[in-house]
Length: 187
Image 1 (cartoon, rainbow, N blue to C red):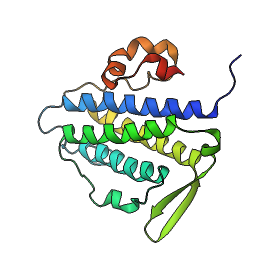
Image 2: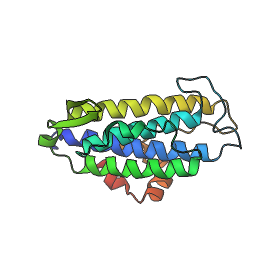
Image 3: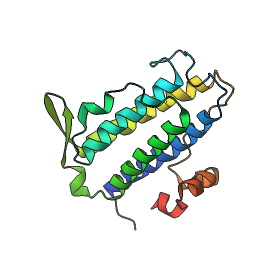
Image 4: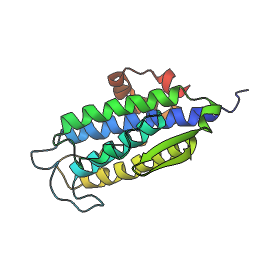
């Protein structure tokens, strides 16, 4: 009988995150000229602004989870990328870092402390709590981009077919593009 592995859920969330970002950014790459930066109704005023926000927040938290000191420098530029291609490349890079971090987790590491550099103070949090917060943040804002795509020439992509084995038939192309196997995703 399989035993409970507390790290498995975080690995799967990291894979889900990378796959969902990959799918969403591919959809955004198909936008017509002007749609990426067009004003929209949401928490951030455009698809461009929202995707850049996801990225800069990922930079901040992933760096802190890795033991880095980037801190608030992650937010020096609100929108560091003006085009979807460069943004997608940067997002894929930080997604690989987050996935590698989660693949290397141990139960002991999950309950260790992450130091998040917030200018004049350092926020100390349990690593598992920071990961949970980060995955929730990403899902929240991807949902906003998904909704904004409804007002464009591109249909919003399916973003929730990554956790259970039965959905494997829906993610084969993306797994191949990312160089992953179904076995890796489901372990």
